[in-house]
Structures are given as structure tokens and as C-alpha cells.
Length: 117
Image (cartoon, rainbow, N blue to C red; front, side):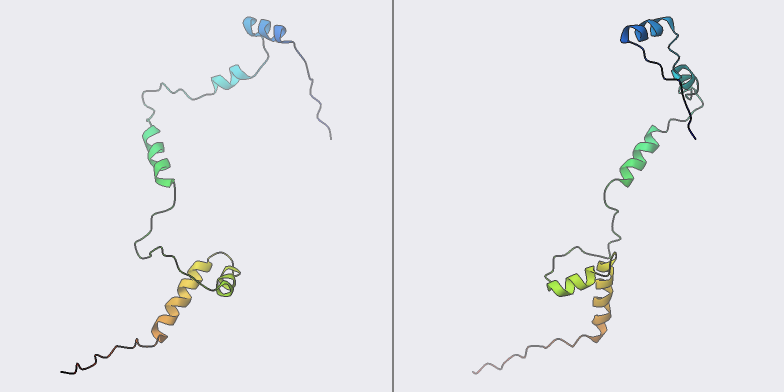
């Protein structure tokens, strides 16, 4: 199925003459007639709303204050195992650490030695 259109070529001089005469055959006049009237006094000015929305969406989303960014050293095999599980591996690592918390051993307390006096 082939749709054939008539292809016409013009020189730059011919195009200038058509533009001056207003007979270019382009659709710009139709396009311009369909543009919204931006001088309508009842039309709301949305530029501030657009700027506010753009400002709000830029960058990382704000955290909820429950998490802290940190740097930690982890064995390569452990890290690669978590990363191999796909997206959300950091959340799964956090969940694994959280599950470990109740099972953690009590910290050893240092005993004070009695000073010989």
C-alpha cells in the first residue's frame, strides 16, 4: 500500500517570491489560526504554577527523616549477592539487618578493675 504525494521543489528565490505574495502553500496560516489566544483576559496565568511544579520535581525526593546516608565496608561477595537480586537490593539489605537486630548478642560490658591502694 503506497501513498503518493506530489513532491514539488522550489528555488530560494521562488520561495521568497511566494512568501511575499502570500501564496506559499504551507499550513502555517492554518496552524497559527488554531493557536490559543494568549491575550484572553479570562485565561489564568499558569506560569507560576508551572515554575513551582518544575522546582518541586527537580532532583531527588526529600527523605522522610527516618534514614541516614552512610558509608560502610561490606565484603564483595555479600554485596554482589544482594545486588544480584535486582532493584530494591538496598531495601532488602536494610530488612536483613533489621531482622538481625532482635537476635543480636548483648554487648559485653567492661568491668572496672579495683584500684590497688
